[in-house]
Image (cartoon, rainbow, N blue to C red; front, side):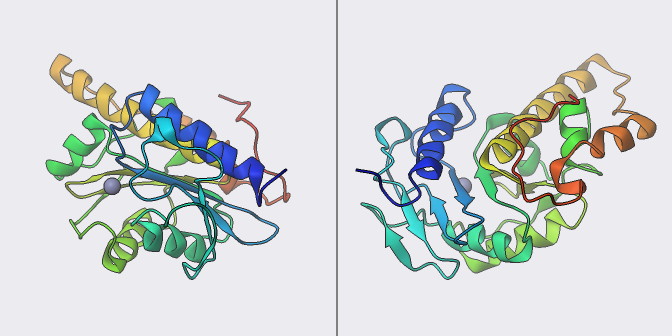
Amino acid sequence: MSILLQELREEIVFYGRQLLKSGLTMHTGGNLSARDRKTGLVVIKPSSVAYDKLTAEDVTVITLSGQVVDGNYGPSSEWPMHTMIYKHYPRVCGIVHCHSLMATAFSAANLEIPLANHELSVYCSSPVRVAPFEMPGSEELGLSAIKYLGDDNNAVLLGNHGPLGMGASLWHAFDTACAIEQAATIAFYARQLGNFQPVPQAGREKLRACDPLTQPDTGELPVEIKAV
Ligand SMILES: [Zn+2]
């Protein structure tokens, strides 16, 4: 028997395991969600359930006001930040927030992550900004995330906490989270080597045009980004 929004809930399970496997998070840390474009409902990782134990039935379905519609557990404590972002960015349908090591180190050093690689240059027009520390789970954290995402970037660093990537789908948001950690790591090592250079401006403009969120809305979700 199928369950409500089964496919999207299976995506949460899949990308949750990918977060662990790729080392972008540990134990139950971080959270991810996706919005169903048809119903407007949000599927989100449940609170305190380990990614490797998570099933599609466990994934919580909520409304944009946080009311639980289905699932075996309550939503991640970060649900206010997720729903605030969906309300503010109507085309965003996926959010991945993790505690990946190098990006979080940049946030603790209050250092923006430069556009060190082509992947991040697709998703951001400027370096990833650092939002000041706010309590996890608070509305202030959501407001701050939106303020520092701005209108030009799909990525932000939550101060002393970790990165957040958003996208037109969960795939897109997960890819953004990977790009953030890669860029932070590359910038860190390149600065040790000396003569660090970000991606040149002309290249960045071409890359940015490949982002599904900078393209006209066709109503279709991107499967993958072909140009890169
Ligand atoms: Zn967190």
